[in-house]
Image 1 (cartoon, each protein chain N blue to C red):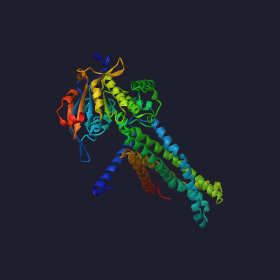
Image 2: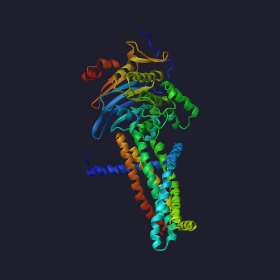
Image 3: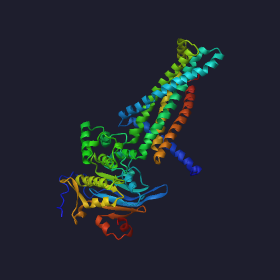
Image 4: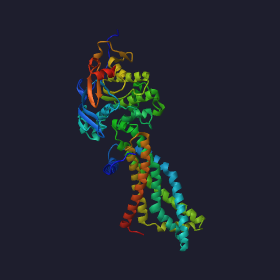
Length: 260
Length: 282
């Protein structure tokens, strides 16, 4: 393995952050410039959104059910088993729904975007696109960003709902809690700040997934091995960024809208 | 002896004045990671002419084409394409200019998720103002030029290497560009397919009067271009009679050690005293 000096390493990292910032900035500014690729946006929405639906449904149901199952034991000790709906709803809507959906979609799509664009880079298709007078940032990056942000928002709502349903099934079947009581508790526990925070996060996560995927795809070097490397890096980087950004959004929203 | 060629019956006029340079490199230098690739390169491509670029692998031939297209920027020097200094242009401005220049990439670089029709129509569809029927007509024309009309609904992966190159030529020529850049258009192809590709390039040169730069490893391809013309009557490439070959708009450029060591006609090349070039072409 080739060793590089700390200065070179730092320079590389700063340059990478700079390149990512430029790509992310251009992906936003291109939304207000012609041409707009509505066909590509719809195609990507189908690939990213509809394609991710099964895994999001499964994850939402499973996480909601496990949340209910694990928290029930603690709640029972305090004789507060009836609060299970409240716990599941707040947990799913503010934290677990957006995080799980974000990570699932990152695993599936950040890597998918990176490998698709990376393959186009190493086979000179991106150069060919530029040579044909088309800006790949507009044609490839902008539609992926729009679609991912838009679809992740709705996928998160679906995951939240499925999580609540999963928790409700466990509460009813294992702990014998009345369904009406569960849903009433779950509904009443949700405040504006919970819903707002929970729905704000997927907008950021979607942006991270698409831009990180596109960045690693566009910066792919070194043939098929490079494509594999970009794919892995995109998945890891987007997941880590989602976890970090999630913390800061939660903290910021607590400061602005107040904590529970 | 063959009759003197009537190369073109109805030439399609080019906006550039014949003889005026459509591409001009002025003292262009470029290095990648401290390795000099091009060092003070200067040459011109006059309107309507073709120039074959030779050099050993890694001598910067393909880089020259990418520089002319503005896909990469030189460290120093100026590159004029149709009168515009591409080294000073923004990416947005370059997109406009690139619509007048076609490029055929080394490995074709067809969009693998699109059909042949979509690949060839790509540039027309990006105009967002051309009616569907017009696009279809021009795609058919371009594919008919390369004799691949029957492949419209196929994907690039379903085509042979030679067919992919021909589709790449159709994609590059569908908007009738003023300049064409060919990056090893016959690389890795068998001799018969290579001749078919060269015939298409000669046809493009002689029928549409398109100026072109062609990077190649195959000397025989460039010599064929320098000794043959496209006869529209027979719809085939024919050998130019001896003594008239100098009339063909074809020149040669040879790179060595990051510099231009030869820039001239077939006759100049045959009469050169340079030992390296003589060995190279022998």
